[in-house]
Length: 82
Image 1 (cartoon, one colour):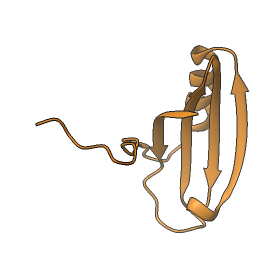
Image 2 (cartoon, helix red, strand yellow; image 1 turned 90 degrees about the vertical axis):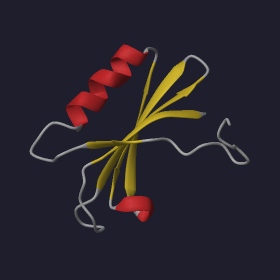
Image 3 (cartoon, one colour; image 1 turned 60 degrees about the vertical axis):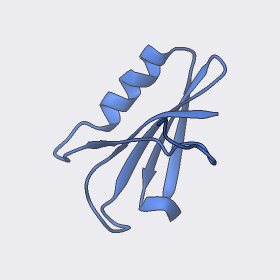
Image 4 (cartoon, helix red, strand yellow; image 1 turned 180 degrees about the vertical axis):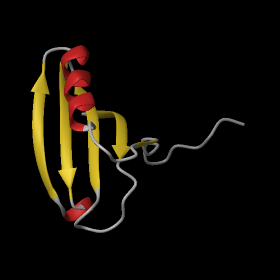
């Protein structure tokens, strides 16, 4: 499974932090909504198309939070081009 995008609501702490991830595995798209940071509780959604997955991402990010996109981590052993 490859992570394509990651958003964070800009808040710190287990009670306030929320993350949304967009991932792809073959021809299936996955959205994860996580509350409470790395050790928090997640809900998962699975879709046939990126458009459906992106619709869910937009709906999950509605509201007063200021969402920030975070870059995915580079693969292990990756070095930047010279």
